[in-house]
Image 1: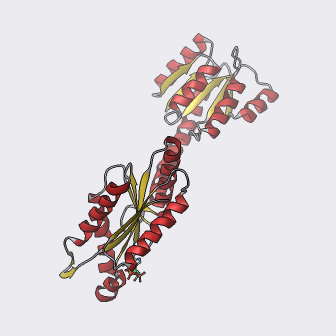
Image 2: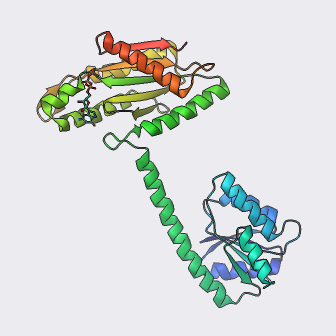
Image 3: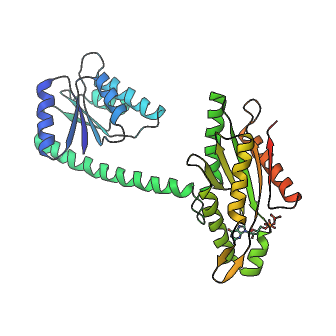
Length: 307
Ligand SMILES: Nc1nc2c(ncn2[C@@H]2O[C@H](COP(=O)(O)OP(=O)(O)OP(=O)(O)O)[C@@H](O)[C@H]2O)c(=O)[nH]1
């Protein structure tokens, strides 16, 4: 485990450090409450345990832990178990420590056997926490991914759009947003089956992805409808980017088993107006352009400066 020891008494801190090193743990040190807070902010994602002395000058252990817990909450940092170390065995002190945000309390001087037994228990908690963090990462990735194509799903694309809208408003910069939809896709399913349709959807994503720049984001917003956030790109250049996506789909046929299919897309694109647009308004405007592209005969791009 990576353990933060907080103690203003050098001998206590060094003795504890030597013992923990002997048990195979990694140790970082802080000599007072303030340093402990700084160290926690720096290492929150790596720390497995904090051992906190209670009686320290300036910022005492209880106050330091109180602050650590509120920083953890407000900055959404990792929870780390905290054990207080104190010469006082008073029930009131133990109660105050746990209320301040500590998870356990050891009375000094700490018997080596008690310490090593506690470390064993903490190791189990640390292992469980790591497993939970890993499982959570997997779940988060799954919750933001479209299963069929592997790109962002609608919810995740909206989150990316929200971030870009906020960035644009802060820096008075702009971006463009495109919605595209496969033309007469129902026919693919009807004539060649759902598997062929699924293949086409995945292949469309592959081809359009080739035309994206690294900061752009592509997401599947509906059955056969996709959204593209085109960053730092407005006007003629945005329209050209959409033309590129359109051509990547129409320029060569799709093959599924021995079936040849000619696929096209219609694209609606708008540029974000910093003064008046929101995520919802730009989405609606792109949708109106897409509808226009369909109405004009499909396989084309309709681009409008947002006004
Ligand atoms: N294979 C497959 N088909 C899907 C999926 N999601 C939606 N679809 C199909 O997409 C088709 C959409 O049909 P429509 O909304 O009529 O649109 P369209 O045929 O593309 O016609 P236009 O958009 O007007 O050009 C329907 O047949 C849906 O079943 C999917 O995940 N896989």
